[in-house]
Image 1: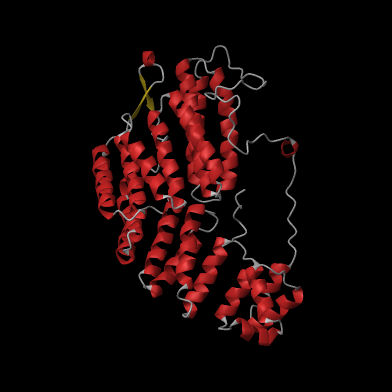
Image 2: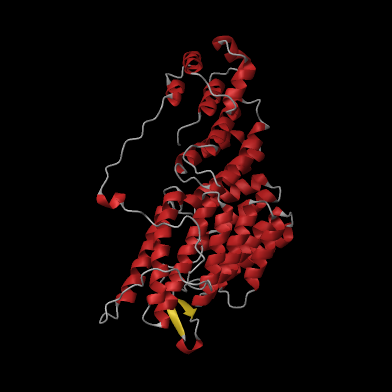
Length: 438
């Protein structure tokens, strides 16, 4: 876990020592109200207080160390490091393919006159690069991954207008749409929902122009996801239902839409409709079993259709394994936490460890279900594993569940183990490694 803030660390050590604020006040001779403000972050502690608390709580210098200034090590510089980096911090719309805006005054891309395979090689490169970014996103904070995606997006914006054929241009546009979709996910994971919405809108525009209608449909599911984590059940259902209604959507897209619709219906307390949506998702996924090849209708009818690389997967490639975890998620919102915990635990066993973000999200939901089901002894090891396995992910989706868990644990403050656990969860919500959304 990233370094704790002083106030959270002090609270954690105090609770472990079995001391109230008054008890600690008697040992360090600072008032309970002052100590409370230090723990909440409203007051800056002095080095003296840190040393006194270290001694009183047996913290072995950990608290004083948190106040010591950190001097970052200088990274070696090179000529490349001194050159400016043009990485977009937000979705670009002016001059982008499909935006309808005038192109900026930049030098055009030059392609070898005799090399007709240049576009093919570039498309293969960016397809593989996106796959690597997706794998990295399962292990690191979204912020540096988003920067990498921004660099690729800038290059693709230059390559698309220079493509030798309309078909190659459409491939670049489709790749650009996939990168924008990925950037939207990373923006959402970093907690910047405004930027996520902008990336989603850009994805829809580019995907439509490239003829990737299934990806355009999926943007509705992404918008439903944003609404879900904001607790807007009505919008979740509306977006997901519209994605399911679209005639050119694939069975797989409609299945993902049904899963999201079920979550919205559960949030609204509509159990029967939720169960029907889950059943529909399962049937649609069964219909897609064994279909590996993906055919995309070209934007121009005269060009027929083209095959898409299997590496360009829309949504999770684990869709067939989502029935259990999503079903358990819905059971919790329907007021059945004991059943939810059992179903989610079984579903987690079907998810590979490489899917770190998905596993962390449903593990956090499992901890919340166990807490509300009164299985408090089982909550501790689940949270222990969650905080360890999600270290460095900085996932806003996971934090939505941890916030609810902290509230649930607060109601059980009479148990020392729950007080300590709540302090650890609260610290994880305010970790210094996560970027605060603007």
